[in-house]
Image (cartoon, helix red, strand yellow):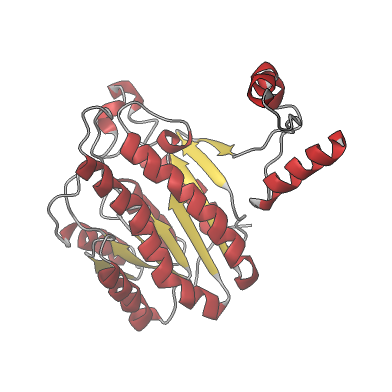
Length: 301
């Protein structure tokens, strides 16, 4: 069955170029009305102009679609609220939010300024929080919503020189986990996308001969699935070069150690059993951890 977005309204942040632009174009091509947001700044977040967003809007309109431009910074909650209101005033609803806005300020942790750490977290994490908070009551009221966070392999697995970026990106997965639980009864599904794509932010990381394979258009199918009516929820898809994977946060079966003065030594001796992934599960919520620990305690009594 073809994935279509006729009658749906989408907001895509950081959509003036790269992956966000591809997301906006793809949603519009499949029938969505798209609010294209982009601060229009440099890779490190400095500067700003609505011209980048407007250029994508012009592309969408030239292809027969409907779109609006917005130059708000996602770090400014009042501006984000106004952005959402812009979409509501034009189209009466917001169905899809793709949190794609981001910046890079890479350095090793030893050399990184705290200000650069905080700024990256403000854009990636708090920017997504602001956007989610602004659309949430409208999605609840209409009993429908699709939210896609943009996480990263740097957050899921780590990457040298990106402590700020990695911390923010994994935090988005935590945000997704709880929002998906809270939104389930309201028809709101929340997922994450970990892209591998050669964009303005990342192209220097790729050998020249790999750039074509890692074009951002190869990530878009995952976003379309996560934003669709039939989307899963609490799912993290990884995508790049036409390949797709899923990443999970799991819990091992564990062992019972108990207490006592030698508990640390007994735990150290059995650490391989604790970390054994045989029979690991993907918990449906944080409560599963406590339930498993109670099971272990009861089985030992």
